[in-house]
Image 1 (cartoon, protein in one colour):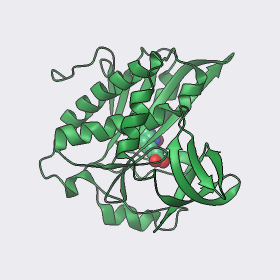
Image 2 (cartoon, rainbow, N blue to C red):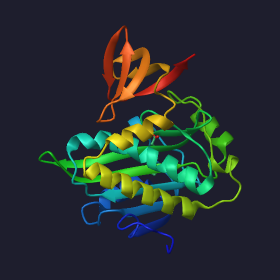
Image 3 (tube, rainbow, N blue to C red):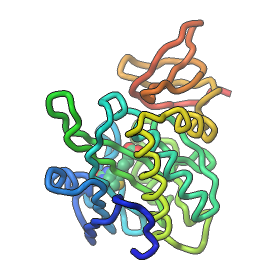
Image 4 (cartoon, protein in one colour):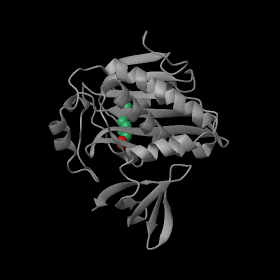
Length: 256
Ligand code: BTN
């Protein structure tokens, strides 16, 4: 832990060899845990992904959840996982020298294949955030073929990447420490309401903005050109000459 440069994030850490889901563990502990408490597991037996999907979490990946007690406004909740993906992409570049792309909303990809994902659960009490849990799954040193085989029939599946395919020296601890530092900085910016730089940096790394895309949302399929993300993280697309805000969904295709 001597390399950890954060003030709060990761100062309290709970480590599990095997757990159902670090997200569930974190939820159970959230009200008693200090801001920035880290729950990390070597493997998860029942990992959770976005939109009720499962997350395959064998040994060799980095599966973690962070318990947060934010002061920021409710509207920032939706920007937070997007900003967190930026923090992780920065940490991957700094520690492993691997470039990655950001796919709206919270995915990190390498050559278009998913290497990491984020998920946020929050408990809200009289319109204030009591606690918020960020779950992060990083395919660090996993068998890509095996995971692809399991996932190939899940909706909107688009391919798996693992960091060890691009970097041979395994330094998971350094990556986690660097991520916690990047994340703490971004979190503090969000707390101060300074979101401009986050949106700008996210956009620079994004593989989504500027593309003609097809999305699947609660209202069904939509096609359009991705224009930007709004301050709350919503994706703005131009579709039939009208701008439309997408707050939840998955990009299924980039139309060439
Ligand atoms: C997604 O892209 O669908 C989000 C994946 C989030 C996976 C992580 S792994 C650690 C934490 N615990 C879980 O059960 N899920 C998150």
